[in-house]
Every structure is written in structure tokens, then in C-alpha cells.
Image 1 (cartoon, rainbow, N blue to C red):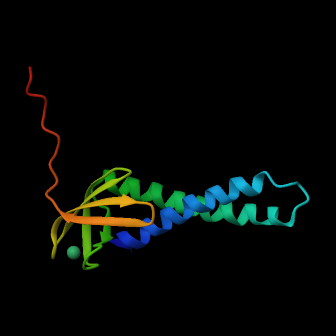
Image 2: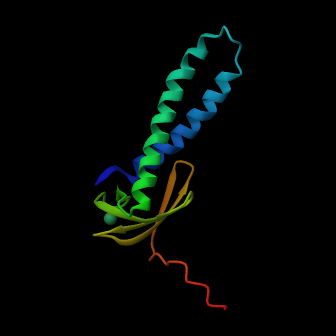
Image 3: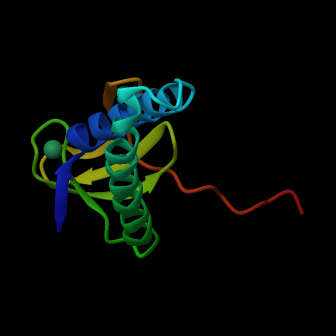
Length: 121
Ligand SMILES: [Zn+2]
């Protein structure tokens, strides 16, 4: 089951990082500033994204995380993910490697290679 396209989710994460900086910035304003009223709603948005991320991490560990493919938007299974690199299996586009940057994705066809067991022994 997919909740988001990978592109949308990635934008949401980039945006919440931006919001986090904004929130920290607001924190340093004088106590009586009206802008401080935004801190709580901002914290709510950031916490929601973080909770969603945690849930997706749980799905990933159970190999059940899916996103809309960044190329065709069909359900693509996430095989592996790290902060800057995702591996997807799309039924249409095949195996994809997705590099993530600030509000930017770079998609290339690439089979996911599992780390080989140590053969030096
Ligand atoms: Zn695809």
C-alpha cells in the first residue's frame, strides 16, 4: 500500500526540515513576539511528518513499504533506503536507484546489490 509518491514524500521531508529551522529561529525571538504563536502549530506539523516517517521505517523493516514510483507513479516497493539513497522495485520501470538532495531527486535504473558476506576469512 502506498501513501505518497516518493517525490511528494521527499518534498514533505525537505519542507519539514525547513520548518524546523524556522521553528528554531522563532524560538530565539523575544518572548512577547506575536511570531511565537507559530511555534506550536509548526511543532505539530513537524511531529506529524516525523511520526509518519517512523511508521514508514517500521514498514520498511518489514519489507512492506511502497511509494509511488518517481517516474510512472505506480506502486513501487522500497527494497532499501538510507538518508541519501533509495532502492525501489517498480513493476513498470524495473529496479531504480534514487539519490535524494535538497528538494531534488535523481533517478537512475540500477539493481540493488546486497552487501556480500565477508569473504576474507
Ligand atoms: Zn515506475
